[in-house]
Length: 583
Image (tube, rainbow, N blue to C red):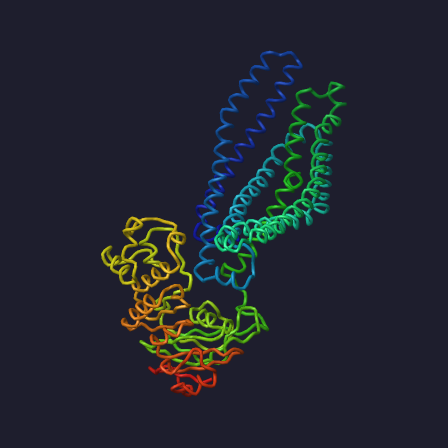
């Protein structure tokens, strides 16, 4: 995940910022060594009752601090700026993969990964911030190790040897005793927290339905079950962290005594000044902090590694990679080909991650101006067929010939209304239109919403449209989107279910007058007159095609078949042909 940032488009800026940070760290480290030296000088001057030496050291310290303080502040500002820019770049890269190839839909349909929104919004932020943080503290530790080891070696070789053994033992114990359990527990804590947050978000998004059902008790039980998992996992996590904190505290506190015990004999015998002992103790602490960096940051590192695991799982699914397209044993994918008309050639359709056959070897062709009504029992695959035509479902076999996808427009039963102005709702999914305000208001009249703009305060009014408009008004507004874009093929998934018969007939007639090809799912007999053919899905993969003029919704199957105008043989997909099928 990190490699492209350092080697692709943003590499110059990334390396420039890193070099600047390293330069600031070098200066900061050198100033820290100088301050440690002056601390020893002041102590020796006080022990020797040498006032001139003491005040010279104080002045030198103040001069060093005058440079050290602004450099310290600027270093942390540049570090956070670097992390923020990297987050912006990486989030953009993830959003490209998540949205452009409709991965957001596939992840939801397949259930391959939990809470991708939380991984993009929070885990990327943690990844970039912590990556920069740990990279810099490791580099800083190396600088600190080199700088203060020279000071320590010049004072006591024994201290250097003791320090090396002490740090090595501490790091090995931390990695082997606390490593894997903490990483595992932190991974599951992140997941449990995300599931709990999602259950609360789900309650908010479905508040009205839950209130009508009076389902608060069931929702509370569901939320409690998610929260219990959060608390139970965190209880295990803090027990493990308690042991780690005990180890870390012991590891660090012993260093307050250890250097003085080793140097005590030299000071007491007079071979070593008190100030040199203080200087050695400061150098010992600095070097130990450098070599014990893993022990001191183990808790943060374990959370960081857990977050990387979650982000890497999302990265494997949404970012470009070199993995094979399909593994052995998986269903083949439906082939999509460009064509002049919409045509299905021997289409067999399965739901994602299932062996159930919804539709078997369906072949038909729609030419401009045709209107196909899809009907059948609930669960037989009507909406699934629309998903396959729209390119959302790919599991199955056969070929879908289609005009450019820009010629398609989909109207669901519950229209999607984004946050924004009335104008943005009307021209969605476009962000701008060549139509002026007068034309947009005319379209609102054509879909029987003549006073909507005046009622809400104009086309640029911003409202919570899902709450303000009834479902029937939302469906009429969705028809307005069709008139704005003028697509060649409109797919309607019970898109008039909340409309009265007069509004439904008027909107269908408006689409038919424009010569639009229609594909509808509906259960009202009144819509038959707006269609030329009926595709009836019989279940278990079976299907029938009838003339709309002779079809009866409530007739027994045998009567419907007998009354069908014709069920033609399979015709070639090439060329301009009417709806034709066999099954």
